[in-house]
Image (cartoon, rainbow, N blue to C red; front, side, top):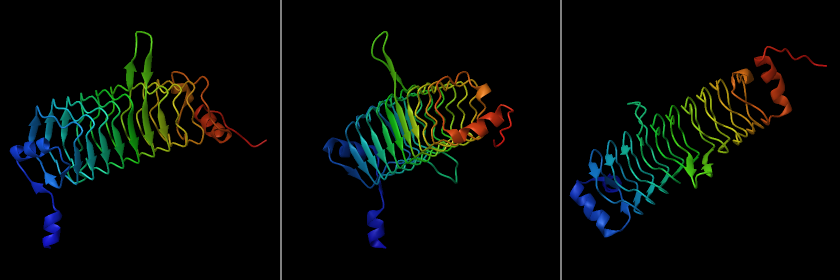
Length: 263
């Protein structure tokens, strides 16, 4: 029992937290839940087995920080600079409270989420060029108005984001530019892709079942190996050059009102 208590994160106040930051050492097993943290520099710090439930990070830098096995349920990252931050095996969701975290208006360029539960989190209106999600649970996440693009010149604009082996069920990606992005081996059941730009996107082996793709651009999108039950081509803005496999043909034709019979 004593050993278990020793391993439990220790609640600290803002002054103690600031002293830990100044030491420059890894921060382990501390509980900063409910603290309002602002005007602090957490850049390049490493956090392990920490708890920050309901913590409010406002106008601070988390750039290059690393978070391993941390719990951040209902945490607010508002207008935070967190480029190249890494989150591994972190929990942002409480099923009892049906509450996720908020990253609204934050700069999330190059951020990596690996094996995290981001269910019901708010990532809308964030700048997220080069963001990466792998093996993440993301049910109901709001990504509307997220910006995965970066302008390198007046004429050169690149879009980059990666979702691998993620559960994107009922995620809101409506109106988002995902051209050329990677969404592979993912579950997009009942996901909103309305008005989204998926031109040239790699969607291989993902499940696009009962998605809302009205007005979406699928030109040149790679759907090889995908499940496409309920995908109505006539509801798309464009599907020129979309790549599919032979087994998709009957289902897609049925959505167009065409019955397919064996020859």
